[in-house]
Length: 368
Image (cartoon, rainbow, N blue to C red):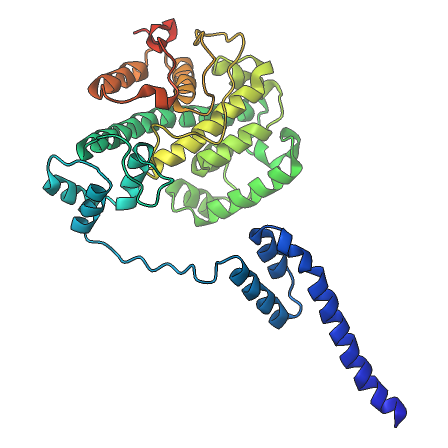
C-alpha cells in the first residue's frame, strides 16, 4: 500500500518542480526586450498553459494588451480633410480626391513623409507645401522607374546571354550548370538546381514544354532555354557563386571590368536586381536608400565618374553603374540623354536627396 501511494505523490511533486524550474528560467526575461521574451516562449512547446499565462502577463506588463487597431476606413473627402489638418495646401481639392480614388492614401504617404514632422502625433507638414507639389514628385518617380526599368532590362538580358554563351561555348556543354565544379558554393548549387527544376515544371513557356515532350534526358532543357525563365534575382546569385575561370573572365571583359574587380560587379548586379524589383512593384525609388552599397573600380577600362565620394546606397551611385554597363553593351545608348531630359522636365526635384553631388553634370562621363 505504502509503495502504491508514494508513486502518485512523487509524480505530482516532480511536475510541480519542473513547472517551478520553467518559471524560474523565464524570470530573467523581465530585463530583456519583449521581442526576445515572445520568441523564447513560443520556441517551447512544453507546458502550453504556463506559456500562454506568462506571455499574457508580459504583454500586460509592457502595456501591449490594449494595443488593438481600431482606426476606421476613411472616404477620400476625409483623407483630404486629414491632410488639410496637417497643414497641406490644395489648389484643387477635386483633383486630390480623384487622385486618392485611384492611388492609395498610404502610397502617397511615402512621398509626403520627408515634408512632415513624423515624431509628433498629428504629423504636421513642416513648411508650406501644396498637394500638387507632392504630385509632381510622385509623377517624376513614376517616369524615373519606367526609364530605369527599361535600362535594367537591357543589362539583365545581356548578363543572362553572356553567362549562357560563355559557359556553354567555352566548355562545349549545353548543360554545364549541372556540374558543381563551376560553383564556389555546393549548397547554393544544390538549391539552384532544385529551384530551377520547380520553375521548369511550373513554366507555361512553349519552348519548355517542347523540350519535355521531345526529350527525356537530361531532365532539364539546355542552358540557353531554361535560363530564360530564371529571375534576375536568381541570376545575380548564379553570377555571384560562379568560380572565376576563363568563362567568367570573358564575361567580365564584355562588361569592361578587370577580373580583379569581380566582387564589385557582383555588387552592382545585386544592387540592380533590387532596384528592378522596386520598379516592377511600383515602389518609391527616387530618394530611397538601398540595402546594398555599390563600390567603384579604381582603374576602370572605360570612362567613368571621377568623383566617387558619393553615398553608395543612394540612387545616383546606381544610375552611374547603369550608365557604365549600358555603355559596355551599346556605346550609342541614349540613357543619359533621356535621364537628363527627365530632370529638366521636373526642375523642382531635389537631386541631393537622390545622392547627386554638386557639379555632377560636368563630369565627362555625363556629358552628351
